[in-house]
Image (tube, rainbow, N blue to C red; front, side, top):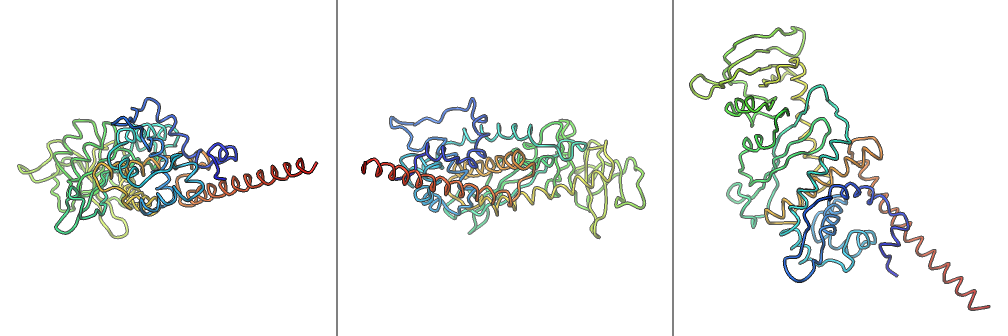
Length: 385
């Protein structure tokens, strides 16, 4: 006899439920996903959300593998899949044509939830947002993902909260998409954007100062610096330069507003960083830029352990659905690891969660078999009296 959802719940299938629980609050007020025709949806939004989270959590590498699990795996069939199962055509339609508005809504609310729950690791340094882009290999049939001849790529543009180690604003473009405009859209007033040399733009530096946005951005060593004021430095420290300057060639692309440039050396490499954080020590500016590498680590972890870049969608719409689902999965893991273990997300805890889910389904199976055996024995006893 197949195990029903109610029986699995009674058998204490709790780990996935604990992980998924914050979505209940995040869905409050969410726009409803409705069928566009007279027939009801074969895959509701809850079905879609659970399937996508399960896809990332269990490191599935294709839609075909996911669908096989939804049909054959006890846990997936009873807790994740719709009651009547899901066909490949229905799954593809759901991923590529609906749910984006609802996923965006949940993602924003989960962010707010995570911000409220997770501690700020570098609170004294302000609201630090690392900004970077990451390329996603696309199929040649994905014509919208232009990159170069014979190669298709999409690009994710992400803001990463360095205090709480969680993703924030997200945008998607083709592989050729310029990064600087997205930095302006990601950064909000009061936040400090932490960026590498590709984001150096003197007009944006001026604009951000007008909009009360802060930045710590590495610049090219050859960039011309017109010194206005020199700040005192520690001759024994890593910082060798700290001055208020106008950046760029006069009359060409020079900044209109003075900013600060900090130069420092680590392991024989010189770094030049432009910033309008005038309130911090030069060493603190150097430390903030060092934190920028956390977004690189996040991209690598996300790609390796949540299999984000194994595409199950080909349209731009569908890819954004998959990306948002991957980010939602990470936010749920961040909340889960903090609430259950008082830790950051780690592959150790993710593997532990996967093992717990499998152990719980085995317990449910064992309980069901034991119950059926006991009922059969009791019936046999009554039949013999």
